[in-house]
Picture 1 (cartoon, rainbow, N blue to C red):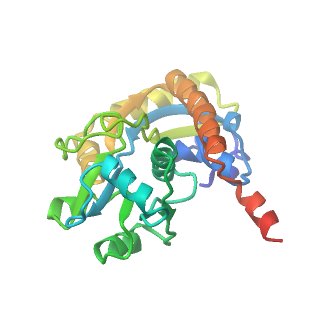
Picture 2: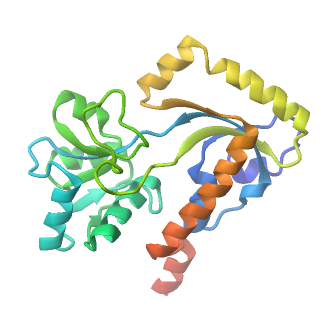
Length: 252
């Protein structure tokens, strides 16, 4: 069920939405939406996104500094796919560019699969997102991961922070309910979902999907979302990423 629709549903504990936090903490800053953060009651977080900047295996860049140096000498010539505009994987590259005072060029694709094909075909230089399967088979190389700490499956790859850039992909997966759902129901749902996250089948699925299991209860998740909304909004403003509606106005 879409977030804009669930806000119109009864707050009875039966109408819930599974989504990632970026829909609440990033998307409202970059395009018009039919909801706002306080239209929802967070129930729990069950996983965290894992992402990285990848290049082709035979690319000359081994570190983020290498990429920044190349971009400094060749403005705009380092091309990459970073997901949707304003997404954490896009913001990671904007953060790197702003910190180093360089320019990259983001190339749009309709999805991750064609972007990976373009990376391996040498049509773009980098991919900020998920190229973990390609890193495992040796066709791509991870330069740095965007997680808080190193990934279990790629312990040799440094984080952005370890590489000198204070950026972390804060996108997490969670369950929310419409505003007004009684606290007693939220508590019962939170406990039920928490127990479900301990199931071995759930953990196996998470590992297969490259999602890191994590947990925040309702209160902690509410604070996290509020902080992330403010932090991402400030970042998007600093990077001068216009809202989708503003872009349309500029084209008229």
